[in-house]
Length: 388
Image (cartoon, rainbow, N blue to C red):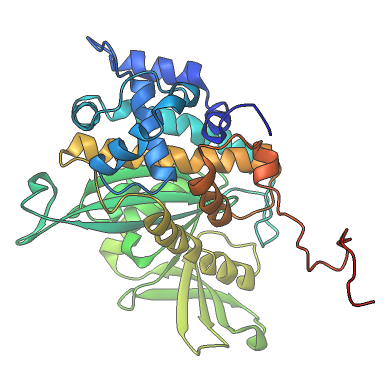
């Protein structure tokens, strides 16, 4: 039997703890803290994410059942429901946001060579948001509508590796287009945007910074055609034109030419009109890039199913943001370990295995390597054949 580190301790060994301590010191996270450190809080919350705990009471009960192993998990403070609730409510959420940004940088370097599906060397990002409904009487600070509360997760997803590179948490009333103002455009990168981000002033800002965008045109947007290119009708592309905006107030916000591509999906018959400021890629590639935007929708669906961001462990704004940033950090940690150990399993499979094995002492390589099935034709069974 392997007498080494627990599986969770092996995962935590990949955390850059020196960076974590700098984040804690930056915001005074351990001012007057005696027992339950910020690292203890992070590890307990990450453990709760990976084992799918549902409440503070659930966390307390499950970890107290493993009390002899807590020291070996790296948790030095005692686990009490009130202590964890107080830490989530009072310790600055920016500690974990800054630490998550460092993990994002690590993950992006590891996944920089991931295949994208199109022949593009530049970075490709998809920007979108998802709404998490809350109870207004419990979360009054997240007022959304007259009888509802909600928060929005605005996410910029790097489509190489599905790594979230930007995350902004707001109340449900913040319009999606306002998040474009917070982005720092990357020259040469592609930004895939839905119609909710249709603001010509912000699109022109991306253009001025040397970035490219692909978005859908609204039905009431008026253009004047400048010239067009021949297209292959069999590919679904109906027209590929250079246009300028016709209405004065729109043209004042975006002064340059745009490329307008009209596409009919051969499978569904859906008609789509795309706008971009890139004039050299084939029209079919532009259409494929926009189709890849659905990866961010799948990402939102995935994190809602596998991370605890729908049932919150605290009701304050600080507690909610702390839980979300630690959940993102747990996702990034698993993604980093997956790449460093060259694991071929999907993130879904890895998380399912880890949820059952965090308190075992199996080496991570062995735990996350697909076992050879006895039904595999290459498997040699060392057993007598009783029917000869």
